[in-house]
Length: 174
Image (tube, rainbow, N blue to C red):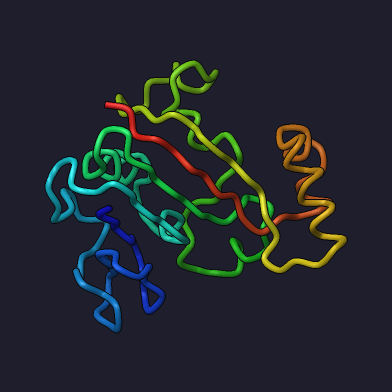
């Protein structure tokens, strides 16, 4: 399985090709992810991991299109980003975008947001999960509850009970 770890920093996934803006331990390819196309062939990777990187990029739609381009048909994309209610999102001056549970629906056929037509690339949404930065039994109970009703949580409780992140697992459709 060929894995691409975007914005890997020093914590690259073992065996992956690590990409980061700056050289360092674990970084195999030094590249600014705001510069397109990325230095990879079409359909090169089985899995693309983007952990805490998309929020830093100038154009999320273009980055998602590039992720789609370099991932094989049926390949997986795992994304971890700050939730829009997260204090961590507002603390980091390099963060440009925050995300909600429907952020990738613009790329998922059959969702109410897909009809906007921002992009032609398509994914199958396999999993979406809200999470806290740290965990304890109370937070775990709350996490399970809000993941049963994520739309209601975001609409009514997100800023009363902020969550840290939202993760997505997407399957590439080509």
